[in-house]
Length: 367
Image (spheres, rainbow, N blue to C red):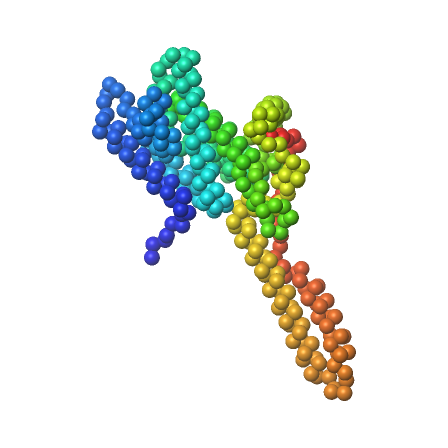
């Protein structure tokens, strides 16, 4: 039998919509192609001057690619990143994250282009096409920076090693270079920047997270107050103090405007611990499954030792002469069996995983 692709439902829908809309856009542009004009699909992609009567383009524009190169990159990104995040967060939380990472960057880019047209009176800004999965791609990188902040990616057989936290800024640099070529539009850089800001803000302050079942925290909390996910952590070490000072001032302004809520000390201590499912090294769902399996094996091991000790006690009591009282026999045999169970328990229980973050975290951001 051919192997089946195990793709979660939301990721599967994303891939299908991306392929259909990209093919449809290419077919329309190919049919109306002209050497003297640029063909745009205003009812599928977002164009400030032409898409005012098509409000759905604020969402559909994210899943439209204009060439085969960016379509291939988008398909690989959605396939691998979508599967990982949807299984780590659940389909509902992943869908909410996609909505934020698509709608907010497109809306902010739309407003920015209209503002640039108002200032410069250059109609080119309002005819710029806003489309592509760039906001989703950089949002996935931000999400990976939250889930595995200490993970290091090694390239070229160990020649180059980069932490996951460095990839969002590297991606923005790559997009800024490609936006000068025909592969990407001039709005791509704005989409990348707004995608970084919107996804980080959502994960930092608003996304619902669930603590581990053994912890004493509430059933759900909002945001991630850990220092490893501060905005300054995306930047190199020498720049962190300056970025942290600027972001602290912006955060204080947002708190004064009641847009953001400051974290309590309990939130900070809870986020810095290792009790949250989504902060584990193997992903939320997989870590929870491993934890449950370890607990089940521990309980089963205890029951097997108790059953073995009970069997040996019963056999020894039967071998004793009938004149001896059974009460003293049970008393003297129960204690060694309990001690045997207690002493043999740590040797058979599964080992615990430990989280060792990178030691280069001396300076942290608060926002």
